[in-house]
View 1 (tube, rainbow, N blue to C red):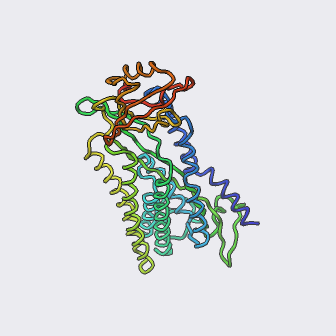
View 2: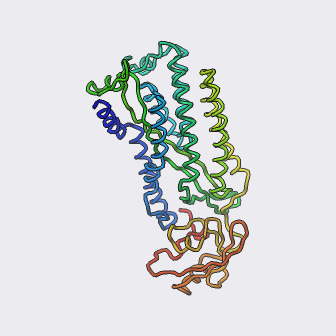
View 3: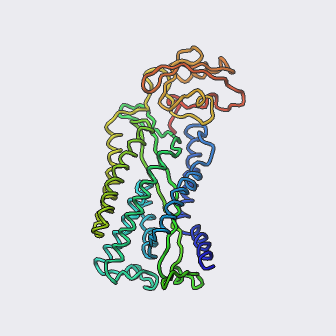
Length: 399
């Protein structure tokens, strides 16, 4: 019964932890800003669903379930001081946006900080002037800290692999353009990708767990040891801007870089079976490697020319609304509309006039971003509020 009570209480505690609350606030603010921006700048809401909230709550469920089962069967423990410090580190890193909100940074920094405290004979409870009974006995030596370092390397590596899987199969096609002017004064579109999702991880905490906080907190015993369940809200985020590549190409290159980093981390993890202290080196490799991956992406974007600038001919598509006639015709961002209803297009006024010339049907000549010329057509229905459901660069006036 104590096991069931503890599990139910840990589920309730999950929803009142700082990281869960902050994560929900961030996605709600993100959605609100997106809708406001679309209406003000694009004069139409591209995505009408709550995809930020769905992504936040759903992307991490399967990886969280699989890793939680692994945690229970293998017996990967965490201590209360590590959990508290992890939430502090993550909240601090949120000050830099979503760029460093990933376990390769947050888990690694948390364990390395605890390792440093142990090295200098500092106790976490003393550092924050809290009762020593709330925390694990790091003063016993470096063994506890090194064990936590190994745990962090394992979990960070597994979550890195799950991130690769999620980004590979997840719906990343939420492209909302932002705009900037080049040195020559030309308006170009860029796409900032900021996915944020939540992975709930179930751990077994050795000792009295949360009884120092709540005297009534139930614990369960295995042999002579006491344990309690704890569900940790792990925030995973990325932030990268695409302006010189197609978003799908940029994502694939990032995934390849992350895969390379995971291979290196796996090799280091294998070495910890013989030398456990090398786990600290593995965590530093994850931190440095993560920074290198993001830096490589940035250099690729700076090296290449702007992909979503004004079209040499026709009108440049910078956004396509889901389930619209434009999507059904296979139009994509970066394409250029050369002709509409047999009228050659030079500006947005000609485009609007060509659409009005036939309110029931539309025939387009389109140049793909790779140079291929295609012909496409579709019916247009009177209840469609935004004509074809696309936005061109030429109709944007930066507010």
